[in-house]
Length: 134
Image (cartoon, rainbow, N blue to C red):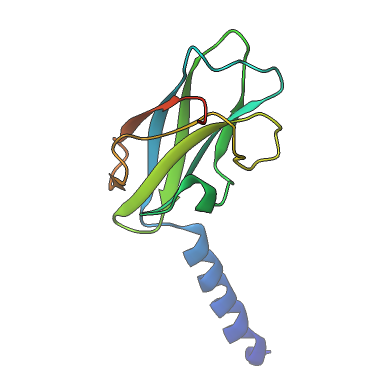
């Protein structure tokens, strides 16, 4: 009976430490689609972020997204990072024209002008202008 107690307690402790995060920072990015960018129905606006120094095509694209609306150019998007007292990130957004969840050459994109951004509380509000890829 007692030989199973330690593994069960160890498992619960590990699970509880994964479920809690000492530092969970959220941030907001105001994304604007430039006037010369065509608004294509079915496309998505994607906010992606990764470690300091990473470029848009180097970042994993599991950030947040909103479906593009053909009569709307301004979007308020949120992201979050976990588990470090300070996170230094590169923030990007792009219009995913083919909805493949990956930035492709030719898709409109932009970067936060403050990159790299230091996130160390819940107060960061960034802005990104999405322009045609030239």
